[in-house]
Image (spheres, rainbow, N blue to C red):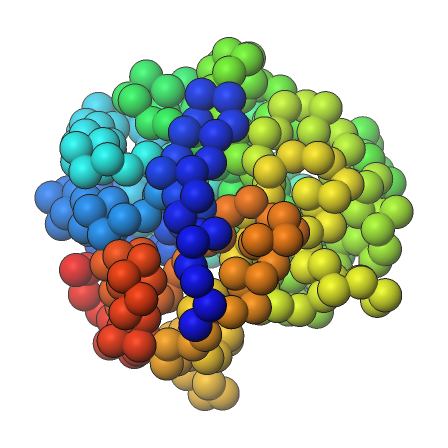
Length: 369
């Protein structure tokens, strides 16, 4: 492996000061009974901070809206007991010298009625669709939209109050914000549907409300993706010009850092350039960008046919990643499954011991260590 020094350069953006360029990617773990991040969750994040991760982005944590959750035992970001749990996470990460941001999440149409603890509440979507062409969810009214915008703002204000170092908004992977972005699930005929600018209005209103809630200096990260879990081939922008049209209003609304989710970080986003999605996003906006997608592993995360868990993978070379980082293609690198298998992954890389890293195995998902 090439010299890993580029990964261990400090990063500074406004008040956000990181010891290195390694980010723990947000990964849903379903280990929060009662939707409370308990002691096991505290220890899980503490160990990654102790292992040398510069910035931890938490698993998706649901905002204060009746239909925000879509999965059992995921943590919530509202209610005294739940926020007290997150306070303990922040304190544990900071005690190890790490920095941390919560990922605020609304599942949108990925929610199925009957999911506890909200029971028969349906999924909320822009046009009643979780997949294109199939209306089987609640179509959001203006009041619904206003409620969700306000809930994101409350969550961000609580994040700042609890001592988090930034906040990330989950606008990717076919969840609610992304369902507004995606023409396949947004066929509204009002101010929130139609053109790319109109489909982005919901996100803009959320970002603006969050900015008002946290003030001018608290960093706002937006995670976004071209692909959707409903359709891995979906794309919001087919060209750099369309990507600029998509990103410009988000920058104006207040995004500081873009977390650009891809399944394979090494794939070029558009023909005629080797730049990946984070590289193009950085080039167009001038804002810092986080790359992600099978970093440090031989296989992407797609399940083996017939299985539902992430694909197992062996440790892989970081040479291409380091070359791109050193060239300034992106600023930060998010690591997912490799950090589930190896809490000390960052320390292993820094010490030139990546060859001794444990492979990612599906059994890793069934325990929180």
